[in-house]
Image (cartoon, one colour):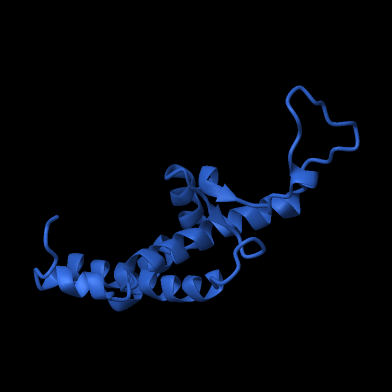
Length: 140
C-alpha cells in the first residue's frame, strides 16, 4: 500500500482533496485553539494556528508518522524501473537532485492535508449498507 503522486494516479484529483484538507485542517486547529484558550486574543489564536498548520510543521509531522515510506513517487515501468536479481546498473545512474527532494518534501505536506480529507469524506451509501443499517441482512 502506498500514496501516489498526481503523475501516477488517474481518476483521483489529489489537489482538490488537498484544498479541502487544508481548509478542514485550519478549521480543526482553530476550533481546538478557540476552545482550549477561551481568554486568548484572536490575533494570538490566529498566529498559533498558522504555526500549527505551517508547511514546516506538517512536514515534520509527516516524517514522524512515517509518511515518506508510503509514498510512491514514480510510475512503475518494467523497462525503466525493474532490474533483474544481481544486475548492477551502469555509471550513468543519476541520484535525485535537490529540486526533486524539495518537491517530495512539499508532497509529504500535501499528503497529510489530502489524506486527512479523504478519510473524513462521507462514503456513498450502497444498498448493502442500507440493508445492514435496517438489519435486513440475514446470516447465512
